[in-house]
Length: 346
Image (cartoon, rainbow, N blue to C red; front, side, top):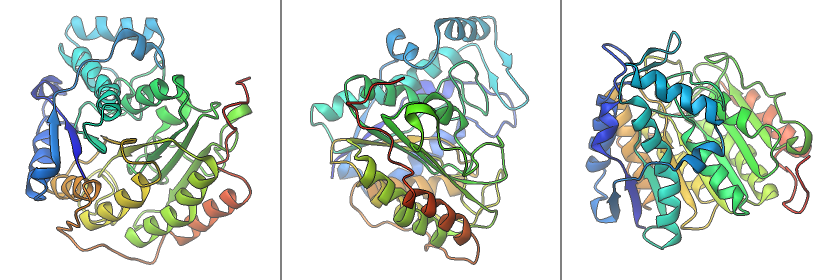
């Protein structure tokens, strides 16, 4: 199965400063892991284009974009305690934000059946008006907004270990996007409780599986089978976008989960299969142990290509089932339904 791989050396120009977890070496680790997966014949590499201003403004208001651009042009610095930008960071973030719409266009033309976007900075913590959590612009939300504008129904599945508060916020009242997050809780940024289900016309189109520290792959696989799949089947997505963070790996320094690279292979296959070939994208989010990131990204992309590559065995444990069962009950009560596209936004 041909997989588009979007990346560019310009992503290295986003300078977060010494000893920052979200560092340029992450990109090399991802590409090294994909190269080690033995799927080179299935990979179609491309250098993404920058997002257009119109695409950016589908999510981020003009004043926020201008302020962020001016901040970087003046030399950058600390945006908050976690998030830093350098002189080139705005241009790099716009390039990362354009990778998704570019991949959509390429998939529409039949250049591949799925796409993996090895980009930085990551995006799922960025809200419409705020950069945070290592994220400047919300890459996956911008792509989802492009798709819903043309009438698609979009499932965003987020398995980064941190809750994607920015993505949730952008689509909080939008029934055209089903957002499902599997994340450690409690953990930064403190959002992602099960009761956060959307509001207004988007009520029920936001689902959070808040998993306790130490959760292993068996609970994640159960969450996919008992929460993600039935909610998606009810919602009827035409596209699936994945916030593919690999910081749930047991070696990651920023979280406390127990996943292996083999578990990410198990997640990628059934989640991305919820949309037809040619309508599947995965966006790099977190993952901060370089070796774990390499192995996990390789396993994920191999799964997208239809290749069973597991550099580590899948895991199982004794925690997380209660959280999965609670989320499954919400789905059974109608969570994940959203509203059909013939009902207007309020």
